[in-house]
Image 1 (cartoon, rainbow, N blue to C red):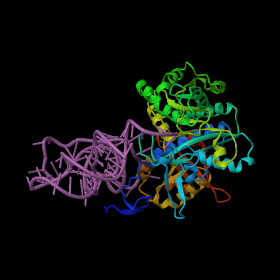
Image 2 (image 1 turned 90 degrees about the vertical axis):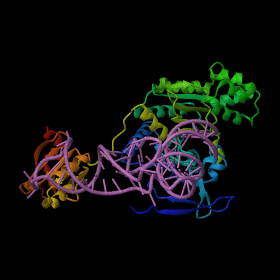
Image 3 (image 1 turned 60 degrees about the horizontal axis):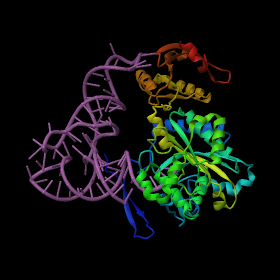
Length: 442
RNA sequence: GCGGCCGUAGUUCAGUUGGUAGAACUCCAGAUUGUGAUUCUGGCUGUCGCGGGUUCGAGUCCCGUCGGUCGCCCCA
C-alpha cells in the first residue's frame, strides 16, 4: 500500500497570518460530509421521491438556485443567528462567498427579481443541498438536503394550511403518521402583541423571543431566572391558558379540512429561532420528543421586501434529510434497496457477440440489462447474476444457433426455453417478449 | 468554542497484570472446462489514526494532535 498522500492547503484568515492545515487522504470524506454508497443513496432517493411526489400533489413546481451565493445575502438581511455558522470563503475573484446555509434567501432573491412574470400565489418547491460550518452531531452534519416548499404572494392563513397539508402528505408517503409525529403550530405575531402588552419594548422583543425558543426545555427555575417578571405570564401561555391567536385557529381549521387535523397541536412554546418569521410558525417533532425538529417553517412577510425590495407576503417550510432518516430508522421503516439490472445475460465465450447484440436490443427496448464483460465461466456468470440482484438470467449457449435461448428466474430457479429470430430489419425478436417472461417461468 | 466515550485487516470487532497482532464476514482464485443460494481449499490487505513521552520492551500507560460519536452552545 502506498503511503498516504499529504496535501497542504493555504488557509487565509481575515485577521491572522496564513495558516496551513494538512489534509491526509484517508478515504474518509471531510468532517461533517457524507458519502452515499448505493444502499444509502437508494434510501436518500426514496426520501426525495416522497418529497417530490407530495410537492406535485400539492400543486408546487420545482426550482433550483446556485449552491454558492454572495456572503452578504446572508450577513446583511436575514437572521444573524446563521452567520456564525456559514461555510464561507474568498473566491479567486476576491469575492466574499458562502455555500448556501438555507434556501429562503435564494428564493427571496429569485422571486423578487422575476415575480411579475408569475401569477400569485407562487407555489414553488426545491430540494437543495445546504451547508453549515459547525460541529457535526446526531442528525446534523455540515451538509444536508432539505425539502423546501414556499407560497409567495398570499396573505390568507390557508397558505399555512396548504403547506402543513403538503408536509403531512410527504411524511405519510414515507410511512409516518400522526402517531409518529406532531405538527406544533404557534404564532409569532401573537407573541409580539403579547409581549407589547407586557411592556416589552419593540427592540427587545426579538431577543426575548429567541430566549423563549431556547428555554423550551429549561427547568422552571431557569425560566424564572432568565425571564424575571415575565415568567408567570409566559408559563400561563405555555400551559395554553391565555393564548388565543386567531390565525392559529384558522390555520388549524384549514389543516383539519385537508384531512390532517389529528397531526396538529397548538403549542405556543414554538417560536422558531430565525429572526425573519413574522406570523404563524410551526415545527414537526417526533411524538416521543427525542429528536431535533424534523421540519420547521412559518410566515415571513417582510423578508422579500428587505432582500429584494418587493413587498410580498410569504410562507414556507424546510425539512432536512438527516433527522428524517434518523426518525425513519427509529420507526423501523424500510427504505428502497439499491437496484441493479433486471436481466443478466449469461453467455458462452464463443457466443459473446450474439449476447452483446441481444443486450443492445433489449436496452434499446427499455430493459435494464447487465452481463459479465470478462466472459467468465458459466457458473460464475450465474453467480454474478444473482449477486447483482437480477431477476432474470438469459442464457446464451450453444443452442443459440438453432434459435433457442434459456430463460431462468433466479429466485425460483425455474428455467424455460425461449426463441429468437431475426426480423426483416435485422432486429432480434424474442418470443415471448421480456414483458411476458413472468408467465413463461411459472 | 467546551466536555464524555471511542479510533486495531475492505467491514464488524477480539486482543487477558505492558512482551512488536487474531476471528468472522466480505473480496479474489480454485474444487472432472453448461446451471448459481449451501460446502470445502487457497490467497489478499494492517507502519494497531498520527506525533511525542515513560519503559529493556507500548495496540495496551501518559501528553498532544487529527478524526469519529454523543452531549452542551447554537440551530436548518
